[in-house]
Length: 186
Image (tube, rainbow, N blue to C red; front, side, top):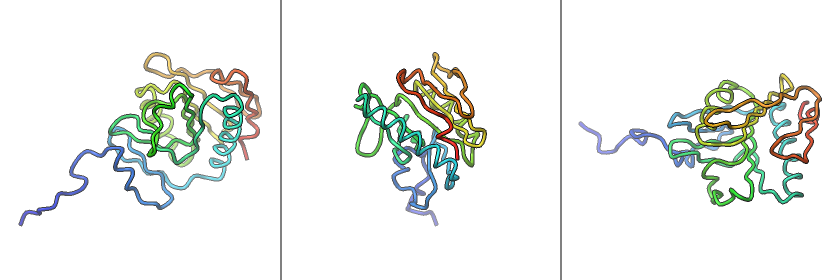
């Protein structure tokens, strides 16, 4: 006997399906319709992300540059792609993409802190963020104590200077900001 009810996943997944993800502590993201589930992050991951939100948030608020968001903001890159980056910066010029259920479009900066699935951030997301036109993408590796700042050049990211350890990072995106990397590491 044929079923009269269709399978809810008998269709391509879209960012709207993320609104129905379980509240179980995992991060659910869709990239080109493929579901990615990431478990709870490490304490080193959370420390680095929190410090970046504090440092960037204070600078951006004082300079009145836009808004900084921590993990939990859904960023909709296209219909089959909704992600939840660790840190998102949206300049005043791009705030029109902000809606009640997330940000739609390419924010000025996405930061991912490496944790349990580094290839997801280093390969899959980096390619998707470049394709979506995100101008700046930083990957933070708390285990190796380094920050990898990428800048979009055409349709690909180019790696800028790689500050490591306890160096001071002076991001091109924020010319008057110095980020002491030692503050990011446990």
